[in-house]
Image (tube, rainbow, N blue to C red; front, side, top):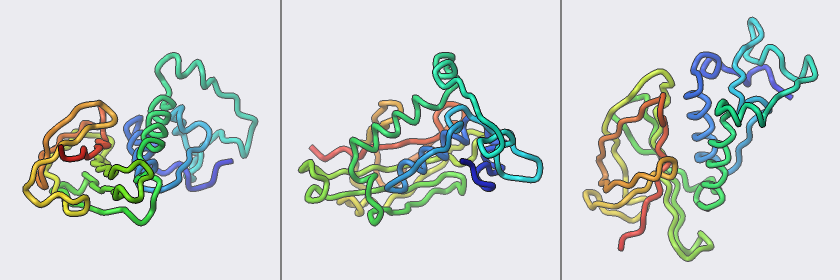
Length: 197
């Protein structure tokens, strides 16, 4: 079932990037999230004067070719599966009260982290996830992000390693870092802060 406010202008006009950005933020910022049927197919045509899909299940029986769309590379389903795998592997993402907002020199770059100490992860290791999202689905954004690294026990200025769980890339960061996020390639970094060796 669809609600009258589910298909905002951001999704109507933001293209695939908007769907990826919104899914990544929902999957990493909140302990639970979900998507409605058709989200993974980028269904973005609204009923005139409304923020709901023009042909949603409220008005008709909807046939969708989920498998065929995925086979053609036209589905967000693999990205959603990746987000769900990341959530399973990182208990910090399944908590609510461990959310910390950080800063960016660009208002279109959202930065936050979620941290759990080793005593609370169930794995015996701390778990820290840092998310840097370009919320502008129409452009490339480059800026400096400013982190309060004390949240996960790193003193300001001290280097630490991060691994991007989306791309597999790794970098050495400090509390001030340059980022460049291309909405048309990968608009969101989901970074695992590695433990100090």
